[in-house]
Picture 1 (tube, helix red, strand yellow):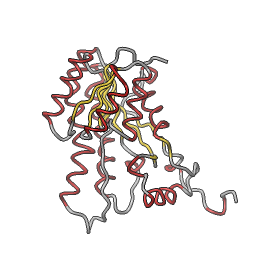
Picture 2 (cartoon, one colour):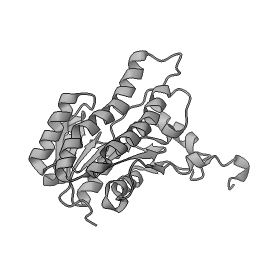
Picture 3 (cartoon, helix red, strand yellow):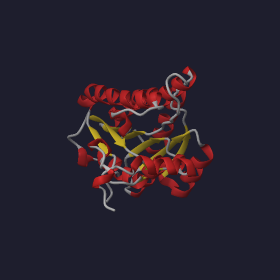
Picture 4 (cartoon, helix red, strand yellow):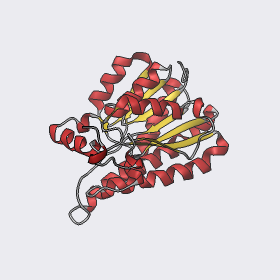
Length: 255
């Protein structure tokens, strides 16, 4: 399939993990992709591997000037931006009582304000392109709660409101805005032994008791970004192994 031939795509946090999987998926389907990230070495290596269909742009998503420069680089190399995937995000673990306000602000600035600045930065370019699709990566956590993740959970809930508001404001410009809510996903951040053990515990009682691969989330991102989802805006797409549906008690699990 070549759903994105001649489309210009910007993926934030695109140097590794889920973001890199999204980048590869778009390139495989004909897109020209800007890998936007603060991880320069990994991002430039990925762009070099993918060839003329990809370039790296250093982007701190909390910095307006970086956003302006990244959109300008995309337009100069490939033409107006048609698709933005707001994927960059971080997590910090601490209970509210034990957390530091600076850490709270950092998480909210990257996960929420970064997405706001991205939407704001690409809107004019998408109008020039005749329309576009913005995909905000929220989380299954954005529909629930977890102890020790107040900043992350709050930011991901807020991305839902940002998505719906942007969808209303941009629909008449033929710009769709949707959010995707992954559950536990295997990424470099979850590759350590402690994180792997914690992840295994978190999914043990899920209807689908495993961690997702990044490629599984990428397939949903590609669908939502494509014209196949042309009548969807302000919508929420979930890929969580049944996490939000409920837990399977040990007594009901196969032995």
